[in-house]
Image (cartoon, rainbow, N blue to C red; front, top):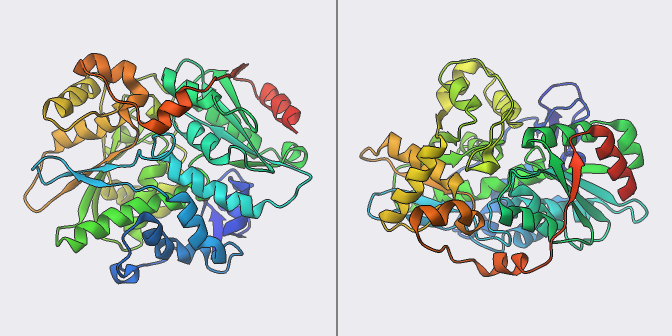
Length: 431
């Protein structure tokens, strides 16, 4: 299968080339030249994430040198599960995606990408630098996935003071081949700097670069696996197709769900739960798509004013009317996030991070209907946001062992202005 740019200005490339490049030369995002179709029967009795991922992703790898390695890559990336948990007796579910090594849904995609790039990059004389902008969780997942891998380096750009203290500690605790840069600006500034560098051919000639944000197919495609697995579980139980509510920032996770549905698996409605950065709710309510500067919220990993994967949504649904009919979007402010965290705990359902809380609040507003089942996508462990969660519920959120181990390590990040010349200088220094 070949892959093309959402902007139509670049030649079609193989999957391996698209993964290695990250961003297309014309600045667009890579998408398949045609979307394959699958059926529930194609999965047989596959139950684990790794086993579900293999038939789901095989069409995308068809004809690529990575294809014979796909089963091994899936086993390496998906060595933890994402359970579909009942929300009491409501008939709805929580899809818990935070059981990886950095306690965030980004772990599986980052590990998948690292496994792919380890096989693709074979030049021992020129290390490949993975440049990643993060609003909180992506950077740590990428750092953990690439840490210690020979021939691969990671440079993380994150907005100083706009991630949680525990997120910031994770970003700087790896060292070795991982470098954390605390940018004096917003996530949108970090994302713009990363995109500019990735599209800079002169810089790339001196420092080979690739991306690990959700603009990368190597991050996006594996995230389809948990939507497929949850949909198959529900279908095998004899239930109606699951409807999903997805906390949404840069739109990568929701885009994975949209692709899984478009390929033919039994998925119903997809609702995008945004925080006060309401570019998407305004668009899906009928307004123009108007990216703007992000504002800081309790759900910091979703503080995105220009979601990159909107380009892919428009590729999948080129007509705005069709696009608006395919999704719903709900904006939740900080007050709604707080209320959802408290309500979830009071109902005996446990702890919720601020991002998951946006989806829980969206569920509260949507209500339930006979014959329908919602799956609220839980994207991060609440222990990463204890400064928000614990005062609200007046309880202590236990640390998962993997997160505790990372927090016990020393951490260091370098301050940096939101300046492209400074980014280039630091990247060249890395070489």
